[in-house]
Image 1 (cartoon, rainbow, N blue to C red):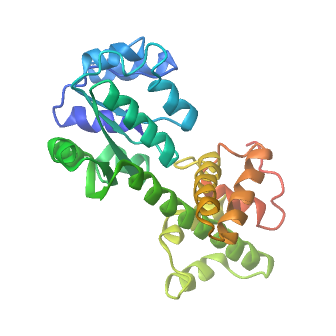
Image 2 (image 1 turned 180 degrees about the vertical axis):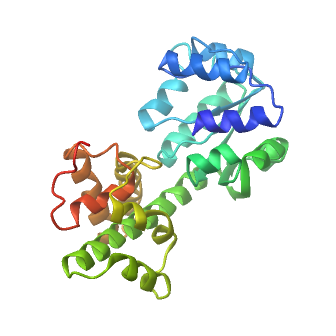
Length: 286
C-alpha cells in the first residue's frame, strides 16, 4: 500500500524525499523507480521529508517507529506532519500522536478503505482523524490519494471507524463463503447462485470483489487473511471494552485465525472459502 501511494504521488509531481522499509532491498528498488532515496534509518526519513506517511502492520510496529527511547521518526521531528495510515488499535494511533506532539510534530490518522489498485490509482477512501487545521493543511495531498475523503474527528476515531468497517467486511466475507460453500455442497450452479445473490438481499460489496475468487480458488492477496484476523481482533477488543456482544465478529475472527493456523494467512481474505467449500480442507500448493 505504501509503495503504491508513493508511486501515485510521484506520478503527480510530488518530490518523494525518502522511502524506508525494514527490507532494504524493497526500499532500494522503489527508490530507484521513483528517483528517490532509500533511507537506511527512520531519522533519515524525517530529515528528508516535511510530510511523512506511514503504513505499518500492527501496534508493535507503530510503537517501534514512534519510540521515544532511541532513534525513530521522532528524531528531529519538530514542525513535521505525520500521516499514519495503518489499521492498528485506536490506542496505538493515539500514543503515536501524543509522542509526536511532544517532539513538536503534528499527526493525522488516515485510515484507508480499499486496496492496492486504489492506492496506485489515487482512489482510496480515507477516514481522517486529527486536528482540523492540520487536516486542512495537507488536504490537497490527501485528495490526490483518494476518491473520497472524510474528516471524522479526533485521531482515535479514525481507527475506531476503520475497525468497524473491517469488522463488517470480514463478517460479510465469512458469510458469503458459507453461502457459496453450502451452495456447492447442494450441487447448485455457483454462477447462477452468485447472480441471484446480486439481485436480492444477499448482495454486498464483498459479493462483487470476492465471489469469483472463492469459486475459482484464486486468492491472490489484496487484503490478507492474517490482516483480517488482526482487524477483527481489534474490533472484538473494542466490543469487550464497551460491553457489547459481537458473536458474529468473534466467529469471523475464529475462522480467519483457523486460516492462519493452517498456513493460509498469506492468502487473500477470500481464501476463507477454503474452510467452507466441500473437499477443500487443504489448499493446493500449486
